Length: 336
Image (tube, rainbow, N blue to C red):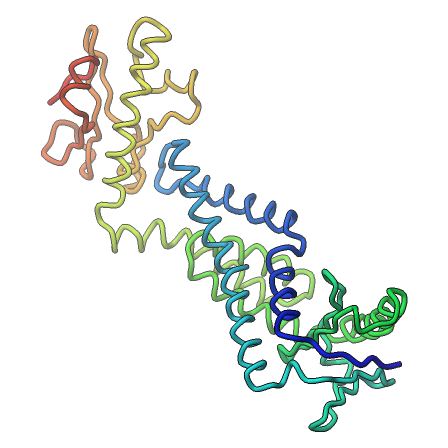
């Protein structure tokens, strides 16, 4: 069984656009959005839940995922195809013959033989039948090269019937590629995803080394936020506390609008808003038992601030809400 074909530059451009931007696009986008929302919900150092911050983080993560999983592979593939086309290698007339041991590719320059072990995948997509190899080579066969649709389906079926035999008996290449996931562990938060994948695959293939790498990837994320981040950015938790204090004033003022008076304690805010940022990241970072912001109701007003790194109220390192004077005159916050 054989097929004669010739793919043009327009064919490769059309195929690349379909492969990277149309193939299973709904499923891929749903997965990327779910991962982005999950990572966007991460809160370091007791950071309170802020809807705008959550969506900004999720959009940033989604942009990174789309860039690294779709855009960059597309650009790399396009560059490689353009190089092959300039060398007049991919657009030449070819004949593919199906042999018992693999595929024979005939060109004017000679014959190439590919064993079934080298085949990675074969599919029909948007008017093209493509055969990909583990050597990162790809043969693109326009469906117009076949006399009928059934002939194309039969040709694809014969090729795919040989691929599972190889995949089922040899996982060496697949397992080797999994180790590259370990490098993702050096990216905080992304390492958690890579770690989970490696642990699952380690259990599936009974490879303890993959499980250990997965655990290390997950551990690195926690190590980064708890140890490395405070070292490289000493004001990191201070910035978080400043941002939360400014937001917490709004929670306190909204509580008064709802109940006619200010709360007796910050914990009362949780009745109306379970995500109210009452935990002070600075205190959590210092691993103290009293982790709430300092709050005291004073008549019809209140005092609110962070006790700072030393954890002692009314000292020089205390951190107060930063509000405009025009705004502070309309609320019950007592400024220091």
